[in-house]
Length: 398
Image (cartoon, rainbow, N blue to C red; front, side, top):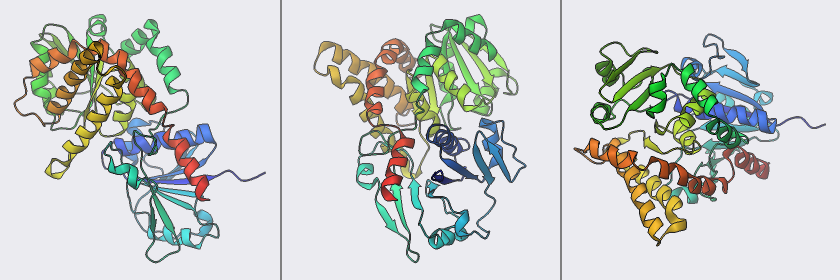
């Protein structure tokens, strides 16, 4: 009987929870669905523990959900060829310890070495996906592997049972009510327009709060502890700790604890609209079957705005393309435009935004946007899922 394939995944936590969120989902899926022996090297176990409470930040090595988790303390250390996995993944171009790379070169059967890159909808990705890069000194070749939104990329992370589980949850009013009640939401909050808010500190949250507070319909904004702290504190009039809640005008703001990843998925499924940030929550929002706005990680010279526009263009085209040129297609273009304008304004592309008008235009189209999100999801499903695509490529290299 052949030995199971082993895989080492190196992760440095830069965006607080996005980096480890992606790596943890990938590691668990590889173990559960593909029987891969995964070792996950993480430099920040405290952030890891916030999304996975089973992690003990004080342990140098531990087993969690079938994954071997190691605290990646530094670039030092001696490694041997037998320590090296069959597949070695550096997430987002992190530098693997030099001793580990040397051991990779000493291994008789060289490992498949992948740089798992960040997600973007820009067209250049298709030309760079799976490109090789020779090591300047050692007999090793690294390949770039890009997640993405087309069949010429690696696709998106998606567990095999994710969409079935989502559909069962969203079709069960009792399950929805029990979940929201477990987070502390009152009956009034549950019947309001529920918005999950996960954004970076520079987001225009205060202006959006004002628009919701003075709006014509109740809004319940659910904010993880530590997110938009200054704006939430100002609205609450007290410290924004988990469980804190306040209603002013038509807006109720409630602070939630950080929850494990499975519970965060349910939060996205239970809300009417989701504001998400970075990459991990961005991908999960696309599988939630709900309208969402992406707060993209900021880059120098506003390069992230180009990346954001590339996604919005692809997203809108996929949803409306089937009905293009028809009256209903033109109406959907208006729905897509409402979401685009809100998203661009939230990312600072549009200055001096009219938030009451932007929200009124978007909130009146949420049902239509949710119904038509199936077009986008069907386009994504045709590309397969990232974990399976990654393993298929690794097998072709072995």
